[in-house]
Length: 281
Ligand code: 1HE
Image (cartoon, rainbow, N blue to C red; front, side):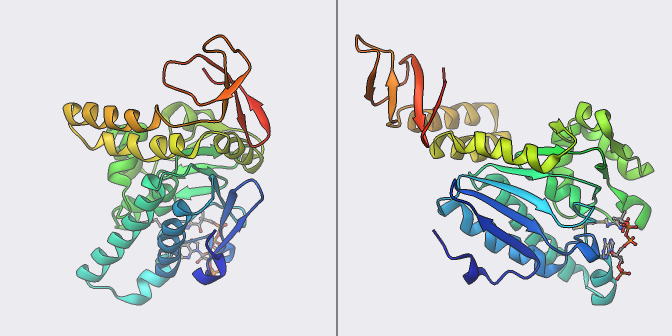
């Protein structure tokens, strides 16, 4: 396991429990967790390190009542960035969010309050979004004379479609409540988004790391490919994942209680994982 202290985090917190669940906290509540350049660099460092560690799932949460207010507008205003400087900053945002989406470790966001602008760009890079009653989503860039720079043009239409994103940016439309779930901005809406995020993280952590790696990287990669290339890549990934050796009790063969290795096609009734018994099919 890597040493979190080596990452020297100031705007994020990270803690890893005995089950391999990492809690990553956006920790600038006084600034509504606005993303300054330093926070982006910390996200890059942290999400570069987590996939190679023993971490099995990540809960991304925030201090304070709001998940994330997007780009740090104060820093942006004071920095007087040139076009080239802001372009390079956006590339660092892409680096951070690509690490999250393609890292191969399930990341579940516990959302609350404002998930706006770059906050929505961050949220849309995770694998599962859980919202509570206070959560709302917006892209206020259009009203502020800005444009998205952290991947919204790629990830948000993938969630809700191009027309809804254009509407959000042109008119400042916000989504909340059941509507946010029905359009695809969140997969779950519950009273306590953190409790649900941990429940989901523990469930994901029961899967084999190799399956999770494929689910949390290959599916995204395949969206970038032609259908023909994606089919080829899927076969390659399945070749690796579906022939992995598992510690299982299989009903295949004559010995229904056998503890042994799973081969693709075996009918598996129970799988021993972290001391619990779960059913897979
Ligand atoms: C900030 C930021 C910020 C708050 N950058 N400092 N994002 C936005 O357009 C959203 C801007 N923020 C808001 O709309 C509101 O702050 C919230 C709805 C998120 C929260 O409202 P509220 O009433 O709880 O807080 P507040 O009083 O507005 O702000 C509290 C403090 O947070 C205050 O600092 P203080 O030192 O005066 O106490 C605010 O300045 C600070 N704060 N939001 C910096 N965003 C790669 S391109 C991405 C492009 C974008 O993301 S555009 C969207 C930008």
